[in-house]
Length: 337
Image: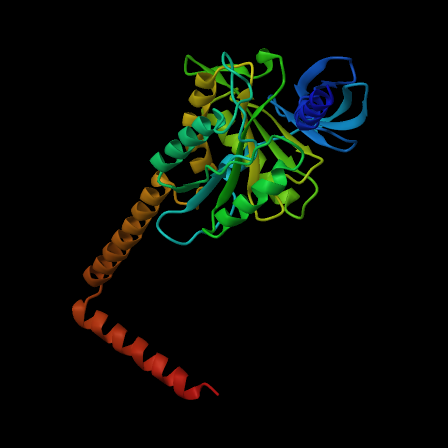
């Protein structure tokens, strides 16, 4: 009997952190309307940007309800015409992917299962999508189970190792745990798909840059696949986002949707990330850069030809111009103190 009680106690200790993870909160606006649900622990001052780009601020949290007030509407169009200024060296920019919660899966199977959860299939699909856009992807398949309050401590080491590759962005791939499938259910080009929620933490020095990056991602996602983003949370927490710029958390659907729904969205998301990082050198951007260099060279050649044609001395004048420039440079060097 004593041994059974000890076993029961051990099971409860293991299970309690996981059960706490699934506490669900309703976001209620000033008119009493339910905007969405979340399993994130929110606090006063946290921000939620909805699918239709309305911005809300959390004013209170009590009895499983998060009361919010609308503070405005966010204009994301500027991110389409004024991209983020990100300078990257090398021919193939690197993106890092990892999974803090290694057990996360989808119905109709178990929503939580031993390593590896189906969330790794989502990570693989995102990896392949990004590679098709010209990125080099470092995808960690490290196991960070159990799914408890210290999972982020274990995944922090993984994230730090990925930073050695100097990634342009570091993505922690998750799925949500809310029980209402309609919040995340959508379709993309006629295919059943899962919406994606972006989460950025406020308790780190990169909070503003990460939040701006999240808004830029939503702008390009809205432009390419309207409705694929459920929203953005700028919320209490760190999520290991203090370790580098453009470190974000993406939730691909929730456990009551299917893996196939999440895979559809993951396969589309490579193009979204590539367009959000125009100087990150996705395939189309590098092609555009080469095209730009070609036109610069062509304009230079045409300009030189026109100069030779309209100048009465032709090549001789061009030669004299070169000699005068060389003489001027030598004189300036002699005069330089």
